[in-house]
Amino acid sequence: MSRGIKLGVRLPMIFWMGTMRRISVVMLGVAFLAMLAPGAVTPATERVTVDHFVLSDSANETYRWAFLRHRAIARTGPSYSARAKSRLNFRTPELYRNVVQVLDGVRYENGQTWIRVRLAILPNGSTGWVPRGALTVFNKTHKRLVISHATLRATLYNRGRPIFKTIIGVGQPHWPTPRGEFYVREKLSGYYAPTYGPRAFGLNARSAVLTDWPGGGFIGIHGTNEPGILPGRVSHGCVRMRNGPILRLFRLMPLGTPVQIR
Image (cartoon, rainbow, N blue to C red; front, side):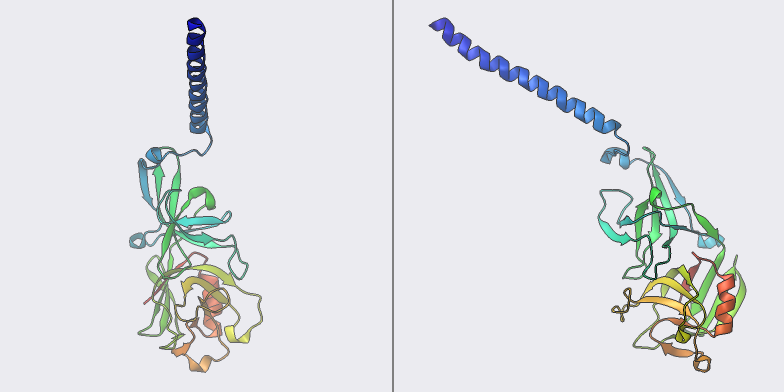
């Protein structure tokens, strides 16, 4: 009887210990496979920065941009664990291929690279981080457009030298053209809308007032069928030019060109 009782006590203990060993082995195997999985990132590895590099440098008049390869999430920091800030769509509201200006980037020890880009959201001037794989090859320009509220003039520079100037119209006081650093994310042609002239540029700038516009109140640069009202504070926030100058600017100013509105 005593012997039977001892066996009854030992068997569950032996069974339990064997089971725990098997579970531990399985868990270690799963952890090891997770480490080998493509794209697997541990927070510790992700934080080891190997390189930080600049892509757009105003001091050297060099600016870079890229198309989106696919939809992406822009985050508050260069990490998948950072908070999501904005969704980047493959196309703009006008169905053109979406473009982002790339500012700088970081490369981690594990090979991951993150790029900081300008965003088309309010507040204007917002930036976010996306994985390098979400973007195509980087394109480069040395041009920059400056729009002045004070002089009601637009000037295009190439490597710091002015190559184009014209008078403009900007937003009325209660519908102001936003100030800040923006970029050309689309070039529009082939439409029929005399009010907007023969050509237009879509910027990533947003109106903080007319946010109920189609697409959310984006600011553009376009021609006009009322050249006599220029220069002036005449628009709902967009920048207007006479049709001759907008056609010339369309030939001179590429996608991704930075636009400073001051």
